[in-house]
Structure formats: C-alpha cells, structure tokens
Amino acid sequence: MGIFTGLTAQGAFTAKPYFESLNRLSPHPPGSENHKKVCEYIQKTLISLGWEVQTHSFSYISPYDGPQEGTNIIGLLRGTQESTVAFGSHWDTRPVADQDPDRKKRREPVFGANDGNSSTAALLSLAEMLAGSGPLDHTVYLFFFDAEDSGSSSSSYCIGSKVFVEEWDISTVRFGVLVDIIGSKSLSLPYEGYSVRAAPNLSENIWDYAAKEKRIPFFRKNTGPHVIDDHLPFLERGIPFVCLIDFSYPWWHTTEDTPDKCSLMNIDMIVSLLFDIAVTPSKFYPSF
Image (cartoon, rainbow, N blue to C red; front, side):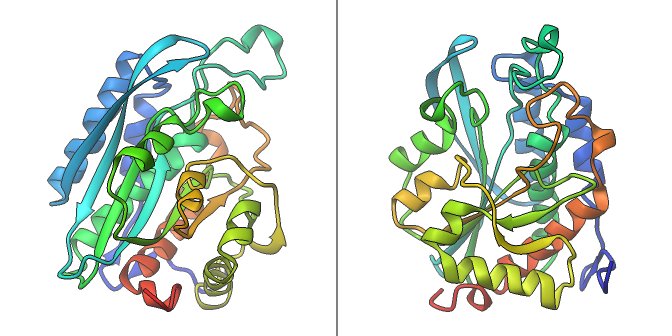
C-alpha cells in the first residue's frame, strides 16, 4: 500500500463514524423519512464542526415517484480571500435497483453504501479535518447535491446540481473535485472522460500527486468512461471540475450496494488527497 498511513499533521482521522451513521439511515431515496433524517444529519454535523451551512431547495419530477422536493446542502469555510475551491458529492440514494440481476428486485431502493454514502462520508470527514487545520487564506465549499440518482435517462439525472448552478452564485469557484462511488474494496480510478477532456491539466496534476506523492495505488493513468455526474453543470459553465469515480463497481444500481463491499481505508485515502487539495489548491491549479 506504499507510504499511506491514514495520518495527517492533525493526527489520525477516519470517515468511519460518518459512513456508519449514513448506513444506519439507508436507504434514503428522495421522499423517504430517512431522506429527511440524512438531510438533518449532514447539516447538524457541519454546524457542529464550525462550518457555515446554507441550503438550496428545489422542486422536480422524479420519473419513479412523481413530484419531489430536493435540498442541496452547502458547507462554507470562509477564508480572507474570495477565491474558492469546491468539493462535491451527492447524498441521495437511488430509489430503484434497476440494474439488479434479479428482475424481481428492480423496484426496490438501492442501499447506497458506495453510491452516495462513501463520498458523502468522505466530505464530512474532510470537513472535520479542515475545521481543525487552522485558518486558510482562501475559501472552501462543500456541495452535497440532492436528486443526482433518480434519473431514468441522461436528462433526469443530476437534477440538484443542474438547478444549483443555474440559481446560485458560483463565480468565486476557481475549480472543484467531485467524488462518487469511491469506497469499493477493489477501487480503480481512471481519468473520467469529461473531466480529462475539459480540464486535462487539473486532472493530470491530481492523478500524478495521488500516485507519486501520496502513493495511493488505485489511480490509473488511462481514460475511463464519460460519466454523467454532478461535475458536468460546472464544466458547462467553464469551471474546471474533476470527477473521481469508479464506474466499474459491479454492484452499481443493485440491491447489493451494501457496506460489506466497501473499504474504509480506501475512503480515508481519498479524504487525505482531498485535504491536500483543499489546503494547497495552487499546487493542483497553478492559476488559483
């Protein structure tokens, strides 16, 4: 596993408590009681860590459940400068397991241990680390997007991030990193196709640093699939936003996306990388 130890200058850290809390409230598809509880949990956790918290509400039509109310959650750690680095995850879980090999289960909700919970736990762990790291000159945003995973076609995915980018002032965001499906025990992260095409230098800098400086073993220097995800609305606005995603996960959109398929060590390695990006953004995006 190289030199990675799970330690930072702030001491030991782990996403474990956040991952476990989210799993206790899973599945949490939009419209469910657990969805409301997770929304409250994320906000209360950020507030307890000293982050400013804002919410962005929107309405949409789910192809599976009809009219729904969505909530994007924004964590803000203000610096003395407006220049902002952003990190994103979707916090909803999918309402239907449409890729399940058992056709009888395809109307059941997805538990979402990896697809939703792993990345959300990573951002909450990042929030804890940054809260204890001392003041930064720049500003950090954490975006927790809702209604990413309720789509039935390309146009009905990523509703929360699409509406957010249309309605929110994101002019100070210089670049961002989206994480999604980053908890697999057999994690493999090639370049995501849209990211490396739109932001090649940022992608290469992150991958090189992860492999060479952090010695994280699962970053691959080949281009993987082009994935429709919450980074695309930002890319369409000209904001470099790189997606870290393992789209080879075999239990994607099935009822078997459960905690036993996940590795906390892999999630923690991603958090360690995100922390370094958050603290020294110009190392990854020199014009920051």
